[in-house]
Length: 187
Image 1: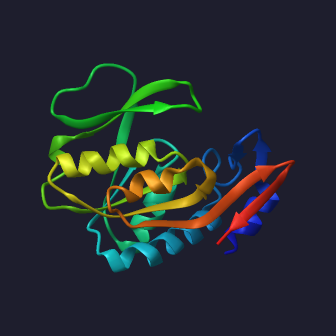
Image 2: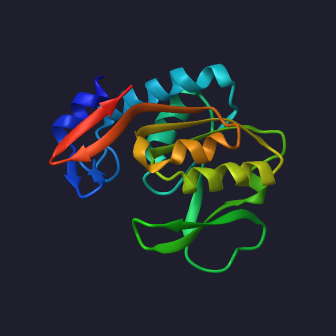
């Protein structure tokens, strides 16, 4: 599967947003998603995760596809606005895209100490959600062995934020810029 070709053919540019709702994060093309799962799994397996963690909702399809390829369970952190819930690990995340703050939380009984966790999401832009997920893993006594993303928007700096934690970062496709209805892919 050539994800760059799929993005070129089906992606739409809206300002600094790459809209991929026809195959990734609204309507899911299962053939494309199976390819994404295989690509993520290929990169993540050498890090020996025993669990995949993502955030609802758009992270669920790639996380499930990758976990399925690796035959691992996956957890999706619940997103909501409000006070922390009891018996959960959580973080508050600021979303510039949505112009609001929300919490991501995982029930304590689902995330055991000693887990080797791969964080997976659809996009890496500023890295705030992935960082929050990684910190939740560490709060629970686990280890983030890698973070994997379908699409990375390089100019937003998320890789640098996550690299400060020492987490290996893997992206299937990296985008340098979105200008005048053109997508610049970088290696």
